[in-house]
Image 1 (tube, one colour):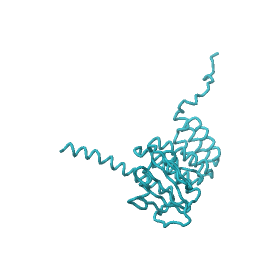
Image 2 (spheres, rainbow, N blue to C red):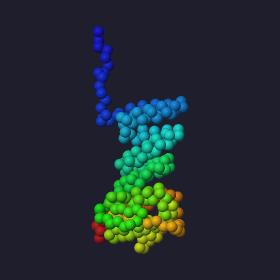
Image 3 (cartoon, helix red, strand yellow):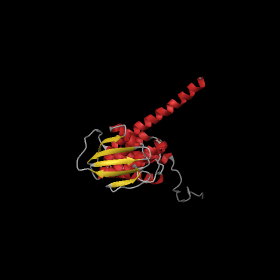
Image 4 (cartoon, one colour):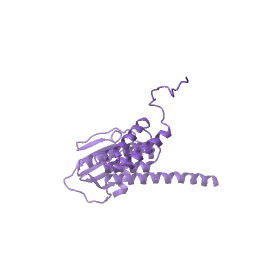
Length: 259
């Protein structure tokens, strides 16, 4: 009698890449579960597939969607954060921004400062911190920008709803950011005010910062919907300026060749 065994038992290799067909099967299964009003089973199926294929953007995006539409905001927020990291690796920064914002909207407790900093460093590696030594003054909050990013400092001030002034000082520049109950309302440098000044402070990635509380609120000259929106808009402007500079370089070289 012929041996009717199909395949020998084998332990799956967790390091091996999951075939695309398995991802498709998981997605189809999840869609069927959702169709027949079994979202919990859809979430379980997608989680199971992600255990074997954790870097699948398609699986994570589908799990994010299912969780968001079936009242599982924490699961959806987790997937947003994971997706943001994957999109940053692929240089898809706008989509990464969107996922970070979505995570924050789903769960306001989430600190997305590290994600914003990762995007800033990826888009503008020329602004990497140089590790300037820091001093500390006797104030509410202080630190070294080579250790604690400006975005982390802003997040702390926002979470604690402080009113006061954050002073940033580097070897060549200095700036101030004004807060009312944790919201950024103004900024200034030696030659700029408002959002332009805030952009200049974001470019300061080395030096020291300190925050001093104020009993009185400040006039609101920056009217962004939130600190996160202001930061994202500023990073986009920096990226656009950097892209514009790169486009001008080849033109300059061509002009030199003609001369």
